[in-house]
Length: 471
Length: 95
Image (cartoon, rainbow over all chains, first blue to last red; front, side, top):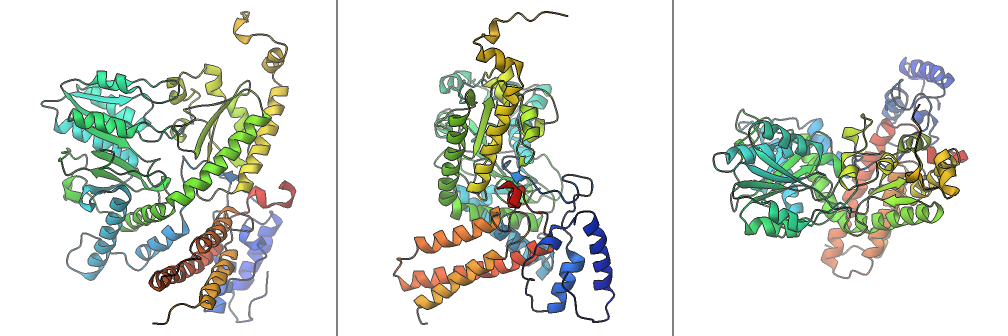
């Protein structure tokens, strides 16, 4: 450690002692090992203090990577995304000095927070072509989905008791529908075709005179397919039924305009677009007016639809994330498409019997779900320990059941168990892709070598014709 | 207001790249994601705008670049305060 000035402060010595002790355990703080030029700051002494005492990054104390371990590459952007530095920069003032409650009407702290919140609201609205008055801040897309489905259903329940959705929706949508069923509503869960897209004719056939809402997600978080939102919007508008879409994975990645696509309600998630966790928004159309029964009662904030103090730093973060996403959408999409092409082409050219789940064309390129036949998904994930990946969505990863989305697209049971989801995002580098591809190919080959099933397939045996004996 | 000179724009460009090199910690260091992103994004943005002639537009872009320089400077410092371990891809044994 570079020596500090002999300023008489006990801190450097103690920290040095602490640093030495840590070094014995493999140097837990990565910062200590970074042989960078010391960061310059106006106050030189603060810089040294900063380095010695405040190198306080998460140390992996028993949770996660463990002392001294290198961190895996992150290819799980559908689960969550890192904060874009530009977003963090905008949030920090509201986490430090500007801490007022945006609903405080009587003083400057309140006014400044309110101004920031309203600015953020406009940024979110601009991204989707809406009016700022149509944006309500929530705690995330899960809350927005709950609000949309339960709120619309309950408001119109005297005359309308039917809702249409799909089998591949996010758990929060499906669960909201299930809880409405217990309240006496009738739900149609549309099946999807093998490519993951719904059949528009089936959708049209499902409408009833008492249908109040159709809910179809824009981009699926497990297999990346893009539903035909424009067509669905037309169909719903023609029948005067409200159209809700969970656009958490679509916003900021593909162009979404609520008027162009005839969307009446939309769920937005902050932490999927390089914004903070714990915040989202719901778009609620004003013309023609969509009415909702609020889920959360209280002081009437957010037009009475969602009471509770709007968390200014988080809202500012969401707004900044939307603004950055709007600027970077084209650039990111181009890069991510190239990286996706690279990953899929390289893997499929080196390894046989790989299936891509979901339509090849109607998809968002940054979410790739591949099934590797004759390889068990969990073992492959564990073998690829240097890359943060997932099989199936984060919400269902604790259970041993294969993903319901894969089951809905008709994937074979064994293929469903062998699926891995690769997520490519704004910060993913070509090097990370190449490393992932190399490790993936290496381990798939290795696991297949060990597999008796693979051996049988190589010998030309049709696995489906085998009669497994009982013990 | 004098229009931004070529020299001024180049100075800004170099300053942005130099500042981005100092990103450290998870996803910032060496060949790591966010440092790589910043450097690549800066290069591509300057390249994309290099033939703009309208002086007002140039002024606007230069101001934006100055803002971004300050953002990078602040975030580099914060990143160094809260640095995590290196990525597997940064270890020489893993190339």
